[in-house]
Length: 107
Image 1 (cartoon, one colour):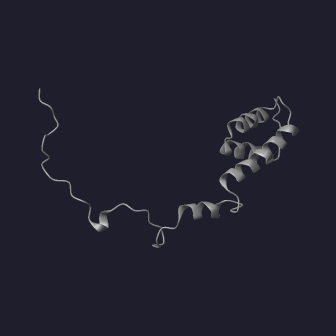
Image 2 (tube, rainbow, N blue to C red):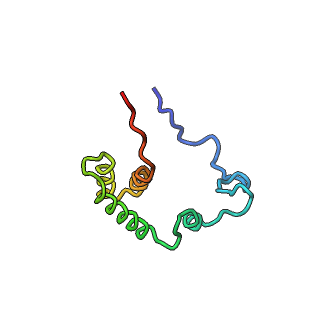
């Protein structure tokens, strides 16, 4: 049995032509903008750094935890999110807590 890899390639590697290179292009044909500027524009408070934003959410989450029943499953999930400093999970649980309570289903 022979090794499938060739010692010498049949064609040399060629650099891609100018129009074949990979690049991130905007949809409207403009030059790509700075990604950090885009992220800052999407945030609700672009003046805050990432750490400041997380700390603000952590404070909101801990104050919400003080108001919730410790046996509430959302409270336990929020507690875990705070311990892990999981910004996405904190956002999700706080958003869920902001919704009006769902009507209870009868049996």
